Image (cartoon, rainbow over all chains, first blue to last red; front, side):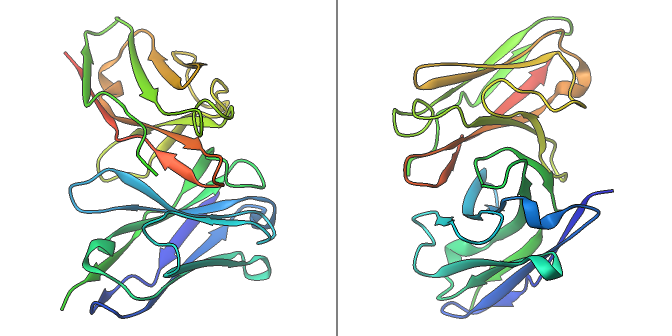
Length: 121
Length: 110
């Protein structure tokens, strides 16, 4: 069974940093694009960042550009999100999701269960 | 990056058909055939229903259909069933090499 498992969520102070991880199993992780998607409390889903199959192409939502960095290690079937200069509005449940293609064009067919990030003093 | 526009809610009776719209711009929905649709039950991971405007994963019922005209994409659900009651949202790729989500639509089966 194809599975994605996120980890790394925590409570962190404003201005702090956090690194989220997402490990894939039961899938050829290295051939798929990946995205991070978040859901703030009481809000809809929001795309955060995406990366293509080999890490050569990445994209970021304006709300996180310059603060967050996406990366992947295909040898470890892992996706990462480095989150710096965290703000209260980054508080959310963060999902990783696999794209059907080698890019991140939006056909996300496998999702993790999410990891919670809380930014609070 | 403004969110794609979806109706907040739609409703229908069992057996009926409903359509949910997803309106963007010429920089996203109108630019590429990279619109996808998802079903989301609270507390669960979203489920891909449609990708690339009108393609359906093999495990998804033929009752779900996607289309696009200009800057607006649509999801039609035929033969509504009670278990279709959920939130639905669209995603589009954009000219800025990003993705943009719709605000989501709550479907109520009467």
